[in-house]
Each structure stands twice: as C-alpha cells, then as structure tokens.
Length: 391
Image (cartoon, rainbow, N blue to C red):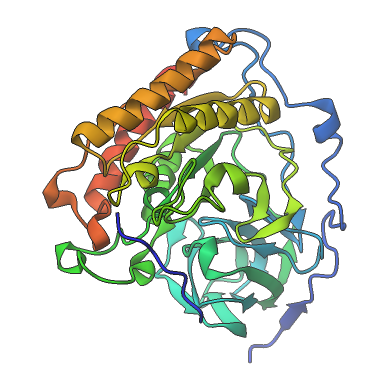
C-alpha cells in the first residue's frame, strides 16, 4: 500500500446566524448527565449473549445550533472544529437556502451535503475562510441539511463559523438514530482513492479521489439505519506505519478529538453498539515483514482500551481487503490471538471477522478498494452486525 504524503495546501429575508451558543453550547458541553449515568441499556440479553447492550446513544453533541455526527471540538462552542473523515452536522431550518461559512486549514477539503435525504454533488472548500451554498432553490418549508467531511484529518481541520438561512430561520436539529457504529482504520476506512479506477493505480496522490460517503462503513451504516463515527488515517498501523515509523499509530491517536492534535481528548460520552477495527495492513506492507508479537500485544491493549470506554459494545476485528497470502494469514492470526486473549480475560463481546481479499478488478487509486469492493465489504459487515446485534 503506497505511502500517502500530507498535502499543504438577495432574497426578501436573510437571517445570518453567528452561532453564538445556540442549543446547549458550552466550552464543556452539557450531555445531560449521560457521561456520569452511563449508557442507556437493554433490560435483557441481546443476540449471541450480548447482555445489557446499549439501546441508544445517551446524548448527542449539539453545538452552534446543529447536531454533530462523529467527533467535534467544542472548546469554542459557537465555532466547532472537526477533522476525522465523515464527521459533520445535521441542521434543520425553515427557508429556501442555507449557506455555511467554513474555515479550512492545511489543505483544501471536500464536503458532501445531503438535502432532505438526497445526496448532493461534493464541493471543495479552499484553505482559509469561505462561504459555501449547501442548499438553494427550496420551497419555503422545513428542511434538513446534513454536511459531511469527505477528506481525512491528515489534510487539516475544518471549522464551522456561521450558517446563513435565506427566507427563514434555523430550528432545533432533529434527533439522531438510536444506532451508532464506530470504525477505526487506515486509508481503506477513510475511503482513500475509492473514486479512482485502474488508470489511477500509480498516482502519487489520491486524496482528491477520497470519498468517505462511499466507504464500506458509511455504506453499511446507511443500510443499517445507523450513524457512523470514523476514526481513521491513511498510512497508520497498530505498532508501525506504512513508512516504517512508529509515531502517531492509531492506538496512539485513538482518543484524540481532532486527528492531528493531542488535545482536546475525546470524552467517549456516547457508547456505540459496535466498534469495528480494520488495522494491520500498514504494519506488514511495503516490505516490512512480520511485525511479531508486539503487534498482537498492542492490539490486545487497544481492545482493552475500547472495552474500558465502552462496557457494552460489540467489538469486531478484521483486516481487509488489501492483504493476501502469507501477509493476510500473519495479521489475521495476530488479530485472532488478540481476540482469544480478551476472551480468556472474560470478554465475550469481541470477535474476529474475516473479509476476503479483493480481486484485481476491484483496484482503484493506488490499488485501494474501488466502489464495488467497498459495497462488497459493506454487505458483509451489514449482514454480520445484523446477526450479532439483532438489527
């Protein structure tokens, strides 16, 4: 898997919302006591012996008048920052148009808006501040607009500065789904290059072809009626990264609210029903060879960290779909060993789930899985989670 270098780079009525603390915003957000009270739980056993599985995320983050999906930094509550792929917000308003003023650092960022349930073409926000139309030409009714970051956090941060509603006003955002997935991974999970074709196999940069919306976990989440929080970064591994360096591996950055910054730390106030880990490709690829038992030991520690934060969550470990042959056997063996170690410690809510290696006709940019392969993976994951969670 190729190393990914970080890039540097008037209607009758208009209501401008300066996002000054709407709907429960504070420097430390109020989650209604959910963090102290613990997750909402079921009253009895779930499928496959998963007891007290969470029924619904206990609280959403509402900041700047919108509900957030994924991790968001609300240190400045009226100007939230976000960076992990797929992170975004849901807004509800009356009116005919909605524009967002965004600030982008590092490199240009790609976004996808969804208007009243209909996905729109992506747009690119350039470095600095700018105003971008999210919806236009609507009837003067109530509308819902979602906005999701398609670009991963290694490219920099995004910040919502203001929303402008034309012909109406922002309303309280709608509640989220009672189903939540968290997925931890590398470029595969980011959707890196997945819009490419075999003609892009040797491209040096595939970030412009990255689409989290089309990633396997986003497709699976929509099929399951769930929301997804993706914690993923290209080139990262469990104990070493694609280039062989050992800094900033995914276990090291897992607790960060923003990909590139050590603070603020995420508070894990929302417990997902399932966490999927798809890591290990970068630990063995690029001619590095067997990472050895330190890989398994660190994987066990990551599982223990997740369990400490999420007492009831079902955890799935997989490795897919770029590895094959001996490399696949090696990494799969270590993941299975880590799962066995957790089982021996009394954790019955962890499993290894095999997804077959992709075939050559499914290559996209830099050999990453194309849209068809992401759909295959999504279908397999959807079926597995339905079976294990009773969805």
